[in-house]
Image (cartoon, rainbow, N blue to C red; front, side, top):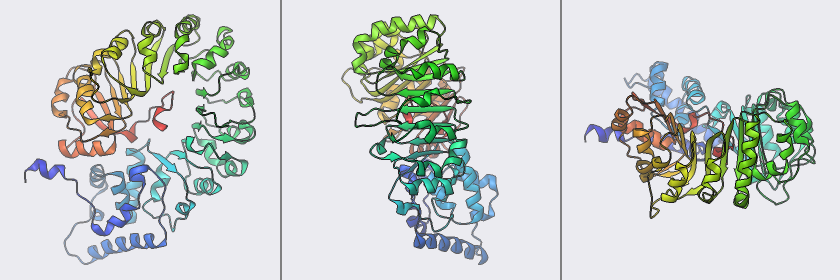
Length: 494
C-alpha cells in the first residue's frame, strides 16, 4: 500500500465507541439528541477502560499523555462527530474539545426539535454535552420543554432562528419567559414563517437588548401572522443595524417612523412589492442606507423596468449605496438583463433557485457589474452548459448552496485559476467525491488575491487527508461552519 492510500483512509474510533458515536445526530443533522442513563453508563465505561489501560503500564500512548497543541492538531483531522465522541473519554479531552468546537465551528448551528425525550440528559457529560459550545440555535418546534432546555443548558446565544417548519404552532409568553436572559445577549433574531399571538415587541423584542440583526419572513398564506399589528416598528432598537422584512405586500405606515427612530439601521432587505407600495418613505428622505436588498419574484417581472427607474432616482438622492438582488427565478434576469444592468449601485446577486448555466444566462451576466454571486444549485449536464466564469470573471465572492462534484471542475476551478479579484468561495454541499488538484491550482493563483474556500466537512476531510494539508501559499480550505458571513437574505439557514 502506497502513502497516498494510507493517508486517504481516515481512522475510525474503536468499535466499543461506535454505539456512542451513532447517537450523535449532530454529525449529520446538527440535532440535539441527549443520551439516556444506559448510554451515559457506556460513556463512563469507555472512560474507565482508558484509565485502566494507562494504569496497567502496557506502554500504549493515549491522548491523555499528549500535550494540548498536539491533541488539537489531531482533532482537526477528525469529523465533528468523532471529536465529540473522543470528548467523552475523560475530563481533559472534554475541555480540549470544548475549545476546539468553539474555535473551529463558530458558525455551526444547533437544530432543536421534539420529541422531548431528547431533552432528558442523564448528565452534562454525554456525547451531545457540547451543545453548550454553540452560539447559533434553530428552533424547529414550539414546546415549553425546548425553551426550558435552552434556558438551562445554553448560557450564551448569538443567533436565534424561529424556524419555518413550525408555522402551525404559536409562540406564547410562557415560552419566551424561559429565555429572557438568552434574548438579552442575542445579536441576531430571525422569524421564518411562525405565528405569534399578541404584540411582537411586548412578547419578544423588548428583551433583545443587544440585537443587531432582525429578520421577519413570511412566505406562506396559511394564516401566518407576526403579532397583532406592526407596532413593533414604532419602537427604538439602539444597536440594530439590519432589518429584513418580507411579508404580505401592503402599505406599512409604521416604516417611516421606524427609520426615523432607528438611524443605526444601515441595511434593509425587503421585497419589490413592499417597496412599490411604500415608495413615499424613500422619496421623502426617511431612509438612508448603505445596503438595500430586494427580492424579486416571477410576479414582479412585468414591472422590472419601472422599478429600475425608481431605484436609480432614490440612489441618486442618497437613499442607498449598494444594491443586492435576490432572484427567485433566473428568467427574471435573462428576460430583463438590460433593465437590471441599468440599476445603479448593483453589488450582489443571489439566485435562490436552480440555474442552467448556459449561453443565455452567461450573456445576461456579462451585462452586469457586481462583486458577489450566489447560486443555490447549478443544474448539472444542461445541453449548452458553459463555464460560469465567462460571465463573472471579476467577482470577489462566490457562493453555492449545492453543487455536483463534476460541476466543481467545470465552474469553480476556473475561478481559482483565473479570477484575479476572487477572495472567497463558499460551497455548503458537494455531491460526490471532490478531486480538485489543489497543489496545481494553488500555483495558478500566484500573484493574485489570496483565496479562502469553505466546504462541507466531508469534503474538507477528504481534501485534508488526500493533500495532507488544507493551507497552501495562495489558497486555504476551511470548514463551512467556520464562515461567519451574515447574508441579507438569510440564505444558508432556510
